[in-house]
Image (cartoon, rainbow, N blue to C red; front, side, top):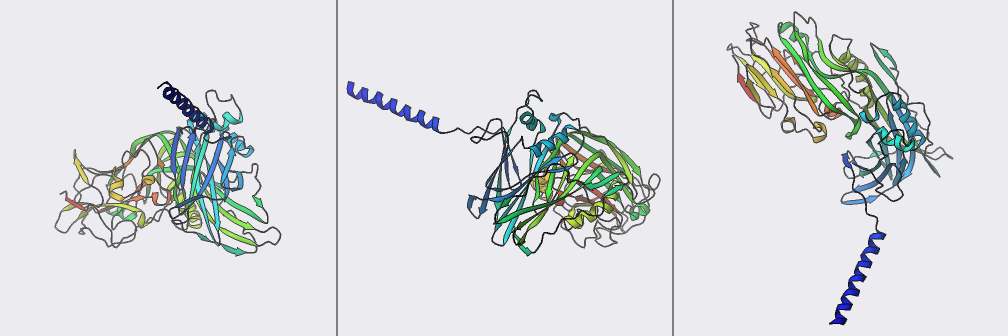
Length: 550
């Protein structure tokens, strides 16, 4: 028995020794402080190194997804830092695991531009813009991603002690190139690189500045891997000025047919606002910029005919914002023969900078304001870069109308959401847009409180109209408009109320979702007296409620 007890003790000591040896040999990976899923991958943030020998900054790991197979893969990588007025190239390289330390001199240059704004570093987040180019035979894929970070983290590494209480973070980005679901670009053989030229629209237009936002800071070398050289090209078009929060647009038909109609536009955007970058073909690729705002207003009230005498828009806007359209192309070159392969192009739209607690206001636009400038100046730009405008008939997510019939009755028709009635108001509640319209989680954002279309109590009106639920009529007379990237926020609400709506009113209301281009909810209200926006010959309603209101 004593011998057996002794053997048990020796065995226990041996097991403990083995366990301790294993624990000392295995590095226990720390838990991330935060993990966000972005587009083609995920980004994890750590307060201590998640990988051995990792220094403060960014590590990018690249994987190829082919059916059920997920394997590490080498790819060309370009990394840009977003600055308040443009983009700064940090690195062009090739590999499977890419290290970008905070003390990179090009990254430090971009950080210095943020310090020039004078904002406290804890009052906003900016981002890196990365492009991953993978080549397989004569197919190529360019995957864009935005990686949010705080300038304070970089400063803590670049200038220790400058920001008391702030420690550098460790950012681990995992990118998946899914060749099973992403359509490849067919490689084009050529004998030279076609340089991306800046569009000939640079200048100042009614308070807006359109300019080349590729900053002339330090430039990294293109990746050189003999016998071929990877050659990236980028163009950045910046637009600085006012950007709209919410808007209502009316046609000349409404002005002439519904004189006396009252319109009230209201907003409530408060808390931390995230502006999400959107890439052509990929959608939402992450938050390019975040800061705190407090935009609340319900004073935009106008009466058609007495206060408004021509077609146009009323809109809330915020000031001094910088919005960029970045086009990125990749080439593969033999420097000795000039043999060149064009690997493809992708385009990203992103907000670079908005002042913290930025000023905001409401304005009317009769052809020379924010809405009109974005149409006449930015829509051609979007046509060139994206291939289509932001708003068209397919962007409409809801229809509502007041329609007067030959029987002398006035009806309210609502298409995609329930109608509530309280205190004499007819209200279309859009807080359930995910259910009503099937919008994805990226389109909805993280804190959508609700978007309301309020319809006020009816007042007699004698305009003779005799159409019920008509799909005929003239094409809406206000052309498509381009809106900048929209926002997600702690509270995000916008609504429009109509008053002086009476018997005989014929008013078609189209609720437009610009997120089909830019992601995350941006809603506008387009009013017409003859038909819905874009003159649809047919449309599908999931709710389809008709209410007789007089």
